[in-house]
Figure 1: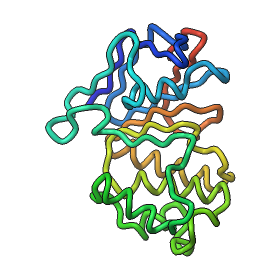
Figure 2: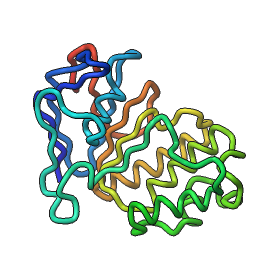
Figure 3: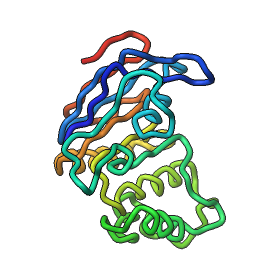
Length: 204
């Protein structure tokens, strides 16, 4: 499977925030999108996922087969917002996403155990701390199988122990042939990554 962008451009509020982006990511590959605030990191992730249109160029997925014909069908998107209902319990929120995305990953309680929240699945999401909310949202990545993880500042609000735990989950995803594209200001503690620095026209 390959995720390919050619001459990609995107806009925010009618203003071009990036253009001329070329990238190619294959099984087990991780790309970190860096740059200053306003450089277009979040916009680029949304364009890749299909939440915003490409204003220039193309983005496509090769060798996804019938199961994953498009980038959107193959990807989990974890944005700034956690996409959880505060009045519902953590388990109820995850059950919704399991039913929406398909429950072909970890069982709900196992996913919560994997992010260190096994004892609080019964609590309303609104009762959780900022870090716990982020960890519950990370559990969403584990309950439905998607080969591409698109992550926007995924470690925001996490303490050092939770960051290390999440790094292990990402490494496991990559070792299984998954792909990760992450917009971040912080290092993600991954062993092997490439970097795209928006605003500087540099790609390594």
